[in-house]
Image (cartoon, rainbow, N blue to C red; front, side, top):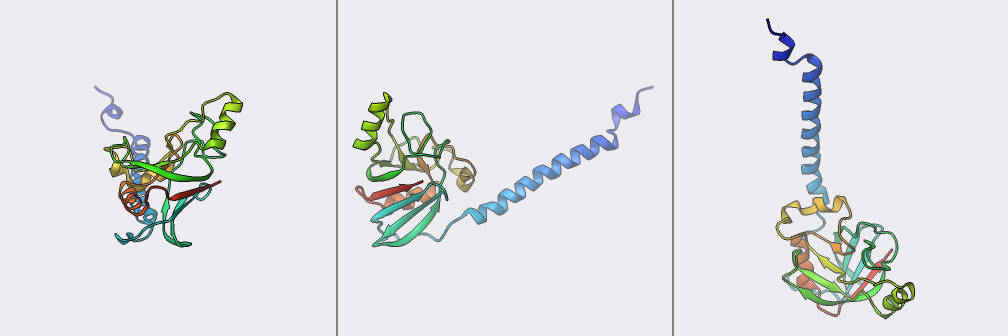
Length: 188
């Protein structure tokens, strides 16, 4: 005769299975509720133009400004090692200081990319003194192409190599509102 416990799971096995299932469902429900809370502000009017960008690394916010007044706030993800100023290639840091939007790449590996003018002359001098490359290719960009469905969940972790990341719809808005040459101040 076969062992009945091999056919029917015991109470402890069922309890563990139910706990795992309820945990997964809880995470799904929290994520769904969190999507609503993670959305920031209403869309910018098509005519909106920013003359300054302020990034606050500590609060993970990017502000578009016009004539000293905020146009819109965006929640962001940063480099995987966000504390401190970028000093060399591969350090996973987002630079700090005042730069400019130095161009745009509509065919980036990420959904649209606005180039930040890092490294400036000071950054290059500092890196040369340390005998390292300062790095480059710092951008404000959307999500990796094909992964736009992740949406605001990407902000739960700092995942870039030093760039400033927003959702795909947000980079579309920023792309439209920010002309080349716009000042960007990145604060610690």
